[in-house]
Image 1 (tube, rainbow over the protein chains, first blue to last red):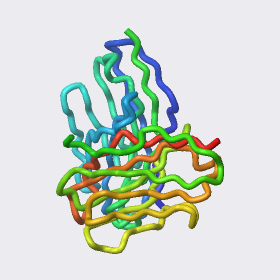
Image 2 (image 1 turned 135 degrees about the vertical axis):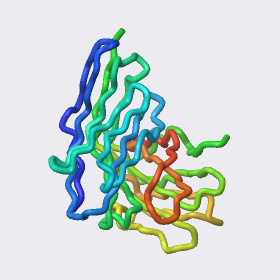
Image 3 (image 1 turned 90 degrees about the horizontal axis):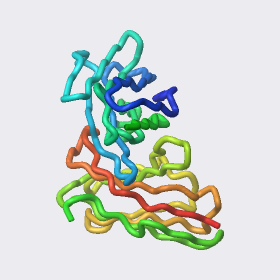
Image 4 (image 1 turned 45 degrees about the vertical axis):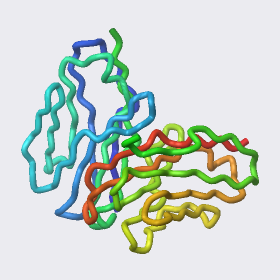
Length: 116
Length: 115
């Protein structure tokens, strides 16, 4: 069965600090997709990234970067020089053949609080 | 608007009443999803519609829950004889990809409180 674990329930940092959000996943498939979504206080989840299992290259987008390591089944998310606007709940998610590659299995989320 | 629209944004009801939650997806998106977000929990899949195919109802928690999608567009999630454990935020999402989960566009959700 598929499972996504986000062990960090809440993280508090001060602006300009770097912060890493952990995500560990479980799947029996060799083909799968991993996602990160951001849920700001407004409630609307916003897509950040999708990564397939065959692409282990790390990705950087501005202050955001993702570290995908199949050896440890992890897909961690780092925010560099955090800002107050980064305050949100961040969800990691997985889809594989067990979900028909359609449904996403979400972790329980990590709440990030960035204070000025 | 151009995004996924959900209504009502907030609904308070009494135990035992029926409720209907509406989702208007992004125009042209063939895939539509309902998820439930309970306090302190992740997002729980409920149901998935793709074009004219039979919906995937595997996530519906009980037969009190049902959903339909008319004309391949608007969807309604119905909860009959509501219970207190049904209290949650119900999120709708749509996607343009027909075969593989890609970027989901979420609405702001309908917060349901069952007294």
